[in-house]
Length: 52
Image 1 (cartoon, rainbow, N blue to C red):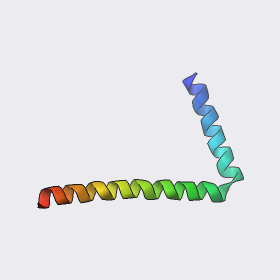
Image 2 (spheres, rainbow, N blue to C red; image 1 turned 90 degrees about the vertical axis):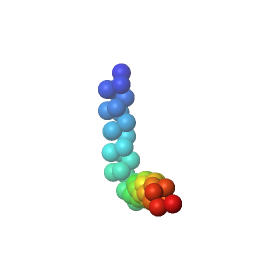
Image 3 (tube, rainbow, N blue to C red; image 1 turned 60 degrees about the vertical axis):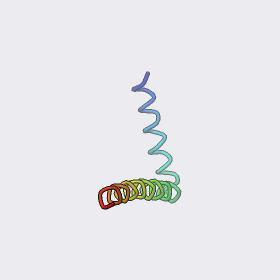
């Protein structure tokens, strides 16, 4: 069942990207910016932790 659900989700993702490339790119860009911010904040945390 998990394998079938995975294939369905993959198909829907490819379909969404194919039919709405602009919004899909904006979503990916937003997710990337969020992940970058998280890692930046983790880096700041450790920098402050070890410098103080």
